Picture 1 (spheres, rainbow, N blue to C red):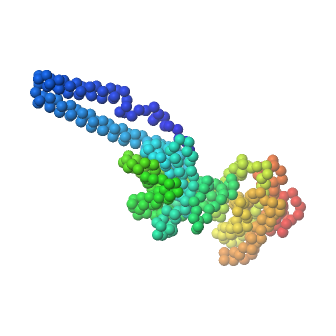
Picture 2 (picture 1 turned 90 degrees about the vertical axis):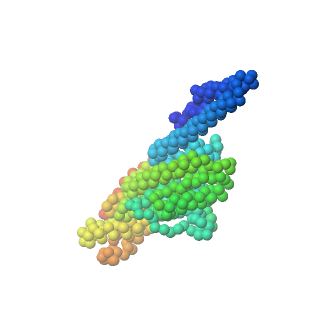
Picture 3 (picture 1 turned 45 degrees about the vertical axis):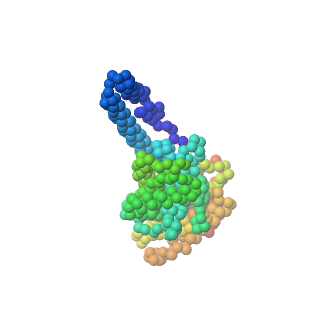
Length: 468
C-alpha cells in the first residue's frame, strides 16, 4: 500500500524558502543593520544625541517586530494552505474509491504525511457487527502493512465487556454491510471464535449470506469520541503505541470504527493535525457508507428475494470465478432440481401457497447440502446445486438427501394436503477440459430423464439406472 507523491505537491517549496522571499528578508535585514549602525556611529562621533540613537533603535525594533509578525502570519497561511491541499487530495482519492480497502488506501499515507504521524490505523466494522477490521500502517519506508481484526466487545468499557444491544437508528437500509476478504490474523480471547474461509468463493458467498448488526449507538460527539479512544487504547496495548490521536468513523448515530494516529515523541499534536484528522474521518465515514450501500445493492441483485438463495446471476459469476482458478485436480458436480407438478400446485392452491412451498423447498435444499456447496434458485421452480470436489457417490447421496428432505416437508399449515416432491438430475465432471456449462447441460438431461421415468427420482447423467 505505497502511495505515490501527488503530482501537485511534487517539487514545491515552502513559501518562506523561495528565493525571492529570501532575498526580500535579506535586503530588509541589511537595511535595519545599516540604520542602527549609522545612528550608533554618529552617536559615538558626537554628531547626534542619545535621542536620535534611541529613535533609530526603536524604528529598527518596530521593523523587526513587523517582519516577525509577517513571517508568523505567512507560516500560518502556509500551514493552512498545506492542510487544505492535503484534505483536498484525500477527498479526491476517496471520491474515486469503490471498495472499503480502496477507501483505507486513499487516506492513510496522505494523512500520515500531513500530520507527521509515525503510524496510521483505520478500524472499521465488518459484516455481522461482531468484529472490526484493523489496517495498521507504519510511515517508515518499507514497513509492511498489518491487517488484523478485533472483536467489537473488546472496545466496550471493562466493567461491561459486552456489546450494547441498542436499536439501530431509523434507516431504509443497513449502511454497514461489508463484503471483504478475510484479514491475515485475528485477535481472540477465551470467548471469541474465529472463522476460516473455505476457498475462492468466500467473497461471493458472503454477499448473499451476511446480515449486519447495528454498531455502537451514541447520543453525541463526546460518546463517539469515547468509543474512538477505547479503540485507540486497544491498539496501544497491541502495538505498544504512545501519544495517540483518534477520531470516530460514524454511520448516522452509530460508531462504525475509528482513525487513529500515533507518534513516538511526546510532543503535543498541533491543531492542524486535529482538524485534518476530524475532517478526514468525516469524509471517510461518508465514503465507507457509499461503498457499503453500493455493495449491499450488488448483494441484493445476486439474491433471490423469495427464497433468499443466490440467484442465477450469482451462479454465473461464481462459475466464472471458479473457472479462472480451477486446478486440474478440482472436481465439480451439478445437481439440477425441479419441483414436480408445480403448475398444478399453483393452480389448485394459489400463488401465495406456491411461494410458501418454494421457500420450504429452498430451505430443505440448503440444509441438505454441505457447507462448501452452492445452492441456487435457477428460475421458477428450478434449483441448481454446485458441489465442490465431491468424492465418488457423494453427488448421488446429496441428490437423494434433497429428494427425501423435500418429500418429508409438512405443508398442511399452508393448506397443502398431498406430498410435494422433486426430481433431481446429477452430473459430475468427467475430464479436466469439461466446462461447468457442459456439466450443467448433462445434469439437465438427467433431470429430464427423471421426469420421464416417473418423477420423485434421482438420475445420474449417462447412466440408465434410476436411483430412488
